[in-house]
Image 1 (cartoon, rainbow, N blue to C red):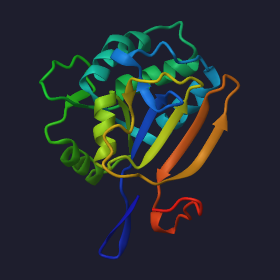
Image 2: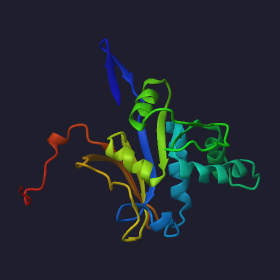
Image 3: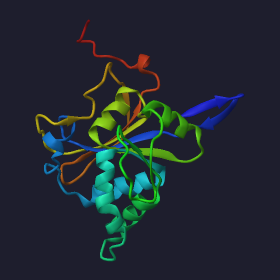
Length: 214
């Protein structure tokens, strides 16, 4: 994303949604169940490496943050991890985390802080600061609100080869359609499809189906 200030182009930090989804668009099943996900080391390696190189701020809701707190500090200290997982674990405990919550939970990770503004205002403040892009991991309610507010610039989706019928949707709060441009895709041997979209810059130029009419 590029902004113009006194005829000078400046890069504005992007928000990247980094998520596993079911084929029918859910981030989690009922009650947040994630047991439907498949294991794919190649996919995990590629996505975690790329997000580490792009993002230097993590955005998350309270419940997802608490899952981070219960896992990543211990993993970062575990000498038995594979080099790739160890790198990601260190990134998780060293990268600034901004937690969005309607309550005031105690945050145990030194790299975490509570957002002090509304979601839209906090993101605007972060965009105005120097730095790399920002990754939002969850939870589903926080993600859905980011999507509703039009704050997500890129969607990095790891689409699992399963439909679960009901659960926690990514796009459940949309008031209007969001047009996207596919910029990268890959089919993994596990059946997971990696998709990376950018929000379409010129949706009016998209050629719609000739077979559908208002």
